[in-house]
Length: 309
Ligand SMILES: NC(=O)c1ccc[n+]([C@@H]2O[C@H](COP(=O)([O-])OP(=O)(O)OC[C@H]3O[C@@H](n4cnc5c(N)ncnc54)[C@H](O)[C@@H]3O)[C@@H](O)[C@H]2O)c1
Image (cartoon, rainbow, N blue to C red; front, side, top):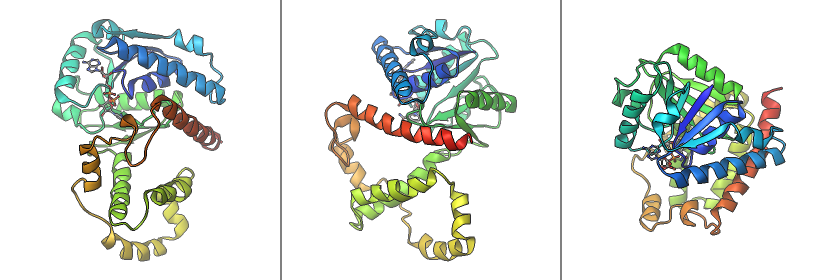
């Protein structure tokens, strides 16, 4: 099929790579030529890394021959079966692109947004009703298996089933969320955990390093193999009931962004992209990013080996 990814920023190139690896013809479109050049380089590097890690034995040159970049949206989407919008989270920018998509896309094209938070089918109720919904990829999208497909009351269930199947064929693990909910699923769960971690850190109860170790050495370690409900079954639901009775009332339920975050943002300490956040990073962020990808690819190898058995 013909897949078009709009936006070659943090997410677009990885999403394009997913469909390239699934055997599709992919066009990536952006208003900036430099962004397209950078995105193309990222895809090539990531494919090469995947081959070197044994994730795929596909030929990088053959895969890249199925890939094109274009600044003209009209030209890019004229034969599109699927369009994935991954442009900035700014309603006015999205609105202009949807108006153009409505003019230039074939009638049957399925159009999904990778929005992290905006209820777009509600904001643009007249834009391609039925064929427009949310498909939320996780960062980095070429590695993390999950994709959240978020339905709205106009979504055509056949299109959801079709996209789910196509994503599965590309090696993804899509899930369907039946109605728009802020943060969808994973961001709600991650945010709940982040709030508690920030609360414990601000109170001085645990160091940053030890909080992160709790994740990698226990919560994340187990979660890679068993889900939340399965874990509750292993614990014993009676024991869960006793524990939740004690712990729930003690958990943080603040609704404001914690001061430790707002202060760092004020100081320009934004994390990897500025060289410092909670931790410090070397200047070569591309190197850090490739190291992170290499670690996640080891996890993907494990995931593929047990999920497919
Ligand atoms: N960054 C993440 O971790 C992440 C994760 C999941 C979802 N998302 C969502 O994905 C979407 C894209 O996020 P991102 O982080 O990749 O953004 P980004 O800012 O890194 O990249 C956006 C790209 O879109 C391009 N662009 C801007 N206007 C355009 C237009 N009119 N036509 C074509 N291209 C245009 C920009 O030049 C840029 O290259 C957002 O909706 C965001 O909320 C982001």
